[in-house]
Image 1 (cartoon, protein in one colour):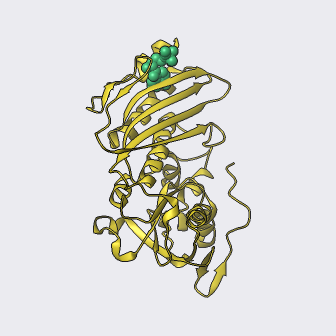
Image 2 (tube, helix red, strand yellow; image 1 turned 60 degrees about the vertical axis):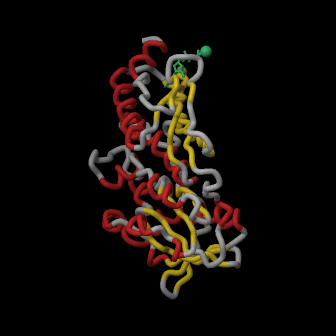
Image 3 (cartoon, helix red, strand yellow; image 1 turned 90 degrees about the vertical axis):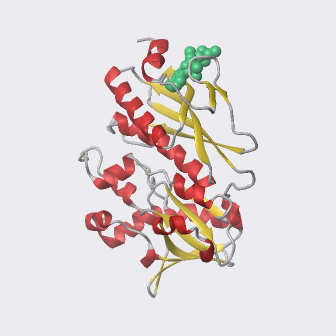
Length: 307
Ligand code: ADP
Ligand code: MG
């Protein structure tokens, strides 16, 4: 199968969107952004064996490549619109490509994102790069740098599941909750959209909460106190590894793709109140202090090993 045939067969579904004038098939895609909105662009690359296990299901690989970009779009507060796909394949195996495309289009369809182009190459290693564009009302993007002393710190979902799920490869069970949390991150677009123009700061948690929250704190010139007893940990994670390890996974694990954001508690939009958990407060003194009851726990030693 040559490149032309491969693209035609797997990556040429019609975009069917007023925001796409011309999609896959020409030298470039022609996009029609809504007038007067700011564009947000993100890109994320996944290398087989580094960012996901080689044995992961092809549909999950496709889904995840889109979901991790949706997560960046969500963290900026934007509405996802278009994406392109740069695919380096070791070999073009039809069954694999079909499943990969199915997962990719599934994630894209959940948020109405159009695949409008890409590039396909052969190489020694499977590498998937997705670039995504979104848009939002001018001036409403959420940055890492806006956290203010007194803000409450919130997160979506539960933390630490994906790190535990990753540890279950290559003998993972197909329906294992923790494995699903790694393979198919939930894009928090709805929460991000509700926070656009409202949250003081936001980031998506992809490298463990401790490190990612510190990026907000560094960018904002602030510090924070976290109450570890309020960290949202799933029952599945607690049952699998116990509280101590669950906290380690949440704080220093990776790949959760949940949102962490700050704002004055009274300004939390009611529409997302049920989807987020307050876990701490922004302080004026730099540094992250994590309290577990009377104890102070240090999560600053040695980063997460990306296997
Ligand atoms: P060119 O040689 O002009 O770069 P290509 O032959 O690489 O064009 O690609 C032909 C068309 O297919 C282009 O519209 C390109 O965006 C699209 N395309 C190539 N690879 C992919 C892919 N993996 N997914 C989606 N579209 C792709
Ligand atoms: Mg060309």
